[in-house]
Image (tube, rainbow, N blue to C red; front, side):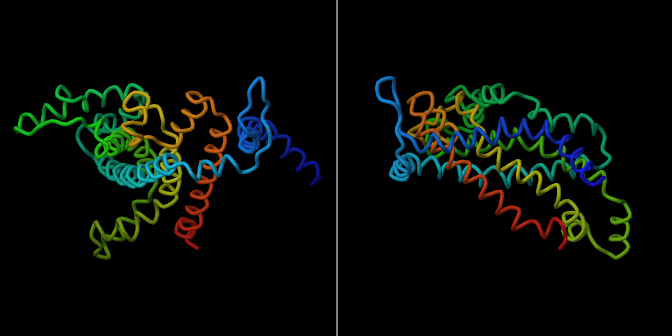
Length: 290
């Protein structure tokens, strides 16, 4: 009977496992394999070169600059998106006039395609005629080339990303807030705990599973967002806004260097796997109260 139950269980997960293997595991294996071969052509086929592609990446200053850009992009967008999402969720969880309109306003950026959102923010950042320069001109301040200045281009992209993602993460926090038992808040009030103490000692620990889920998604998004670069900067100026996924795209389709793109992809996968393991190791106890 137990063997029959096992067989039934494996047969139930077989379709999902087959799709996961075909579209996730096998491409990963093939990517790692391709990263160990040279760049082939019709005349000279690809040959095994071992770790030469990774050594070339390690010696490439542009790669390190792009990696630093992506890490800074993640550090700038992930905490800000999560904090803003939680703040918005706490606000719209209260009984307010126009609560539905406010929730829609917070969630609206999420419903926009990234290309549309990038074109909208391109209007904000356009020199002289853009919204930001128009506002600065009202106060007699000079405008600037927001996306053409290496000092401002990455913060501009971070701002747009936080605006785009916070509403999506807000939905998860709002759902979690609406499942919290009201007795906890009432008990904290009877004990004399203020709002901040209740949030820090009671509510936020109860939201840790949601925070863990949102954090993982926010980190993944920070390393996989690439659409806005096509519209806004194309990685410029001088790679100041170039990110890993766009750098992979350049090697694969602009430079036609598939082994280098495969090596970059392998590095990106290893980086994401390391970040995921670190997140689980650091937050698992807080999430599950062990």
